Length: 206
Image (cartoon, rainbow, N blue to C red; front, side, top):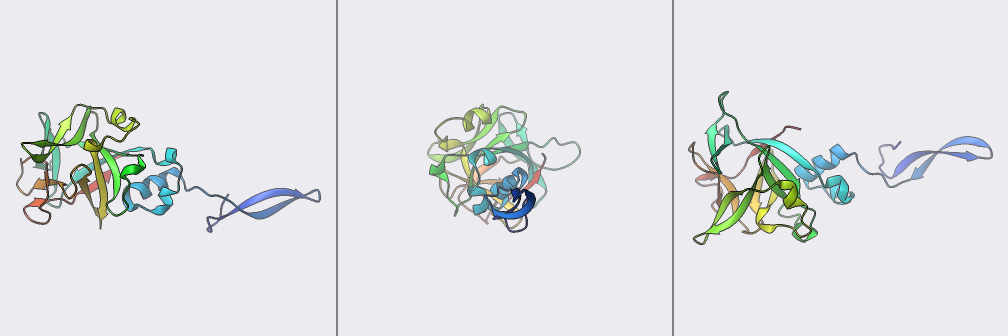
């Protein structure tokens, strides 16, 4: 049992044959659900001090933008559409990358992004010299479990107020973005705050 000061724990010991309650300095670890919250939503140093096993975890989120548009699969690509009861939006599977090479507190938490219940992962590559967001037929766990981080699949997940941004690790300053017009593909853009939306709301689903 711990108390409000995370460096102190209650300990029972036998002193002079008498069971005695004492305060001991201890190495307290926050509960798993708090670690997950810290990793995905705050980038807190408390999370960085946790054991790797504690933050090696997948989380599922619904995603929408300020116009209440959600992402849906259209063949092998993602497009946006206004949410209604007839729409089946995708859910994002976020998994933290444990390769320390790509950890950058100033940019956010490096994550892999998969589509729940589909062996599809978001991937950044070039088409005719243009950084492009694509879907690859990959199981997110297979990508995550590689010894070396799979850079084209990595995004810096950063919190800006109550919203999230996703910056490509392979292409710095290129962000996942959506058009303000429904039916357009989810893309990468370098033009933030102009014609495209780069801030998204994530809703935990697990």
